[in-house]
Amino acid sequence: MKTSWRSASLVATAAALLALTTACGQDQGDQAATGQNVGSAADAQGGYGSSDGYGTDSGSGSDGYGSSGSADKSAAKTRKAGQLASWESAELGKVLTDSDGMTLYRFDKDTAQPPKSNCAAACLKMWPAVPASGAKAAPGVDKSLLGEVTAADGTKQLTVDGWPMYRYADDKKAGDVKGQGVGGTWWAAAPDGKKANKKAEEEAGARPADLKGLSTRKDPKLGEVVVDKNGMTVYRFLKDSAWPIKSNCVGACAEKWPALAPVAKNDTENIPLKGYMTFTRPDGTKQQTLNCWPVYTFSGDEKPGDTNGQGVGGTWYAAAPDGKPVGAPK
Image 1 (cartoon, rainbow, N blue to C red):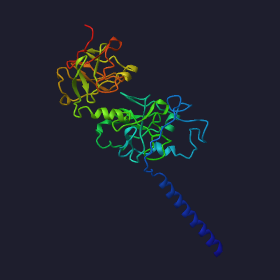
Image 2 (cartoon, one colour):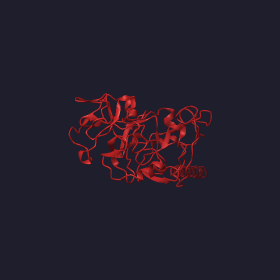
Image 3 (cartoon, rainbow, N blue to C red):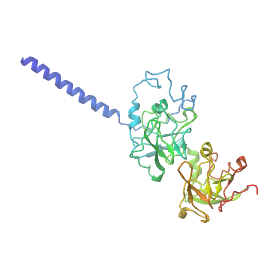
Image 4 (cartoon, helix red, strand yellow):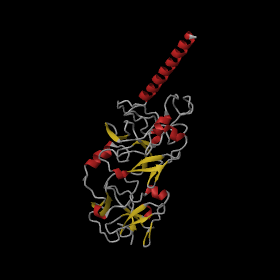
């Protein structure tokens, strides 16, 4: 009997030690490595980054999502972003990361105005939505740029300047950017929610850093036009109305011509304040007006000074400070 009791005790002790060792090993496995290795993703079909359209290859890996099955995708899905940060990539410029140094991405098929995630089902397994809860803006970034949107799986997903944020399941350590360019639609995010773009950063550094929310610039062809805080041209749509104030740019139009968000009156320069007000769009968001006319930016403008939206469809024109469309037919 003594021998049996001692054997049982030894077995129980060994089992307890094994359980403790396993738990500690799991904790260590959740820690991110600190190396920063800029990777490049293979060009793939479908816009989600692979032959099955979701950044996966159903023909490889035991889980059917382009991995060996050892990656803990559920952990990537539920891990909070915490204190956002950034690191300087020689190729991409400033890259936005979570508190563990893992790269955050944005998806071209999403929209920022209004915020909407179009990544669902298998897509979310490879591109887990970053939870909004507890996220803090990266140093030097206006905290008002952070928001949330409901992802397809019900997650309250973090947005930065309206763009939903994701991680990439095949990024294994801090500094990995294996999701960059996948499918021609997935891009590492910059700290302000834009696509990480070293060239754009350098161009931005060459323009005044103290632009107001709305101001003006002298265009060599159009004269004085209104620009936003990033120096991007502001436009008018001839199919809108000023009284009652109404925007007729919705749906796909609103994706191409993002509505200008409200700008405080004291955050303007050279802008007449007569008729300077906001209104509620059909989707419930607020939009700025100039002299009661709704105003927009153009997704086809890539840098400050661009006026690619001028005259589009015979209905879109750069806005003058008094809200009139510059160059529109009388």
